[in-house]
Image (cartoon, rainbow, N blue to C red; front, side, top):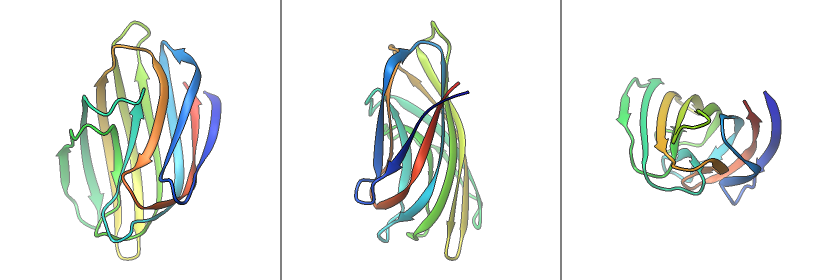
Length: 158
């Protein structure tokens, strides 16, 4: 793996973007992140978007922890679904997610997991996703759908 960048979350911007110097035409990216989420009394989801695309993602997520549930298909189009807090609680989080693709392929595939530790609960996710991209990977955006976030994400080329 080749280290590309460490990007911090700004507390008032629960997202970060990395523009790649060269379009990736094979291999993939690995994301490793951690931090604190101030959820502002709402469940917040963590996504990774490729090339600013906000539609066409297919995701399957399985949860375990204080409450074993199956989220199943989460095809709301925002990106590769990585995980979320629960019970509207603030959380300390950690995640790993890999987006891979074959050099001549048109589909990005993702695999990862996340843990959200909250005051009274522990929430873990196993995540799988796919996106028919029809173009090389040029940029990525890691984002919560709201809240305040402190932390960082390290990004590696694989």
